[in-house]
Amino acid sequence: MKNTALTKTHEALGAKMVPFAGYNMPVSYESVNIEHETVRKGVGVFDVSHMGEFLIGGPKALKLIQKVTSNDASKLTIGRAQYSCFPNETGGIVDDLIVYKIKEEQYLLVVNASNIDKDWAHISKYNEYIGAEMRNISEGYSLLAIQGPKAVEAMQSITSTDLSAIKFYHFEVSDFAGVENVIISATGYTGSGGFEIYCKNEEVQQIWDKVFEAGADFGIKPIGLAARDTLRLEMGYCLYGNDINDETSPFEAGLGWITKFTKDFVNCEALAKEKEHGPERKLVAFELDERGIPRHDYDIVDTHGKKIGVVTSGTMSPSLGKGIGLGYVPSVFSKAGSKIHVQIRKNAVPATIVKLPFYRG
Image (tube, rainbow, N blue to C red; front, side, top):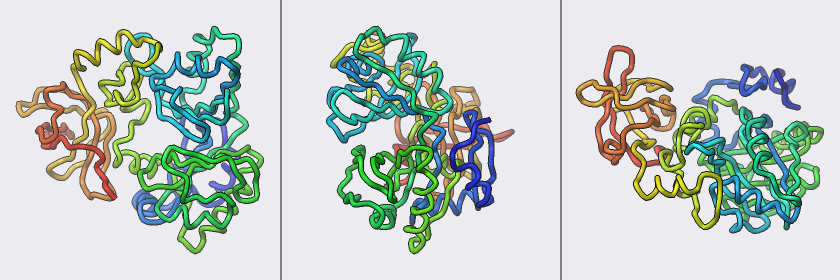
């Protein structure tokens, strides 16, 4: 089990630690609901240093990225980031990721912790270009997510960069908490604003300490992975391994918007056909009409009790006070307002298909 550079800090704060993607990670400090509300209304800090980072540089770096990702990275300018995915050869998704353009001929790819080795092998397989140099820097870098509506105000005193000027999916390389050359990125996963901070492992303790010092008057708290999950689910953001995987296509998962046919990429011909015909099943969002908590792998059934799909993510929404979830159903059931049922033990609990996001702050 790997540790992040802040593991001892989390333990000293009384965090409940659990194994996650091969790392010893804080799942909660107080309670999920308290931590969730801290991010929705104030400011909270996640240690997400388990995430993977790859640098791809050189004159053919863009060519390689265009080949292996679904989105059009040629649209990126320095200081911008882009959500994307790695399509596989059989219609599914190797992983979802964020691509950052750091400078001309240099890109940072941020991937999911559980897929670091798989993603590296996948990109390497397609790197037939002299002039696309790959570096896996995952082990040397830490990542903090400072999230919530008070994040800008709370953190402004520890950087010379105007945080309010960094737009969503933009970033600055600047000083932060007394450390130079830190990536300050407006690419959060919670839907409540804030930043992600990329720094070297040896710098992260100083940054963590100064972040909590600066945020003290704003009620800043450390937040665990459990609240990260409820926050992302209220926004309808996909979680790899739950809502998307090697068997789910971008079009089934509602990720057609990051699948651009302006270039040649892995399996693009088959995906173009799927787009033309429409997928047979779709990832939908639903709210329970009655009390209950939908969970991962619960069956979705029709009004006659026949299984039509499966819940991929589900929880009791702290913000809405009702059961919410995502799941795959045949496309005929995917329209907003459609009625389905979720099999919770012996009860088929009625639910309604809704448009995302669940939470509109």
